Amino acid sequence: MEQVKLDIPRVLIFTKVSSTRLNNTLHVQYHRKQYELVMAVDKTKLKLPLGLPEAWNKGIDYETMIDQEATISDDTALLKVKDAERDEQLMNIFGIIRAQRHSHKTNIREAAIRLSNTLSPYENIRSLAYEMESGRLEGMKKDLTKRTAEVTTLGLNDEFDNLFKLNEEFEKLHVSRRVENTDTKLPLASAIRPQTDAALEVVCQYIQAAYNSATSADDKALLERLADHMNATSNDFKTMQRNLVVPRKKDTPKEPKTPKEPKPKKPGKDDGKPDIKLPEEEPKKPDPKQPDPKKPDPKKPGEGGGTGGTGGSGGGPEIHLPEE
Figure 1 (cartoon, helix red, strand yellow):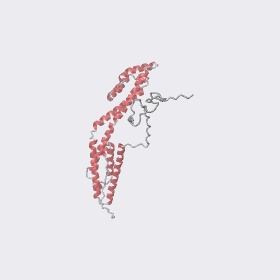
Figure 2: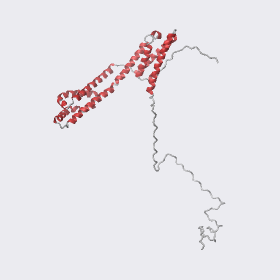
Figure 3: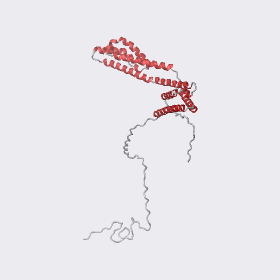
Figure 4: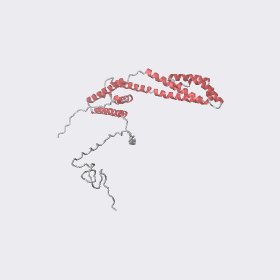
């Protein structure tokens, strides 16, 4: 059989990534890595139009800022942690004061009572909103200037210093988050991501066109290596994408479940099985030619219908007396 091999020019095929499934962080990182690969090649070899690399990079910059803004929004969790820390410190302080009101030492007991009376308006501020709790703690700080001796007597200087330090840290975090949210007015990720994807698609088409029009083997080899590197990057991110969607199976096999013991059947309850009853055999019809065994035969002596013989009437059993 004749072997036929067609002389067909090679084209560069770029691996596609379903970027819609990538989260914001992976999506912008994917484009950043591809951008770095393309920009590392001589621009005269790629023949990209003016403004295309800049537009692509602009989309990457916007996605980076959007991702950073999402990270800033994570400060909400940090705020909760910081608020929990100052609440714990408040509970510790008021717990010590309540306990020392029953101290056997007069000076400690009286100091605890005076301090408790001064701080009674602040005992339940932990349930207030963030801003209100922060403001009340500033008021507590001023009121404590009148009870410095009592605080020292109870040994609470370090506890109060830590409380007000936590409050300052909380307020700085709270204010910085508010300022960041006000200053940054970024587009939605759903609006910028498709444009960044479109820029990459156009870049790939220009790389393909540059490969088709290249006249030297070195230029073609250069563009082939670029396509290989870009495809390797795409494959890596596709793997990351799959790992995000489908969790890996555990190596350890699952232990078989122990079968449950069947529950004892309750009387009168249906066990779920059909109640099968065999049909009763119909009574056989008597053969008119055969005598009925239940009726006495008048022809035989000793049975109910006969006269004479040793058998009595009435069909009773035949009795034999022992011989002398």
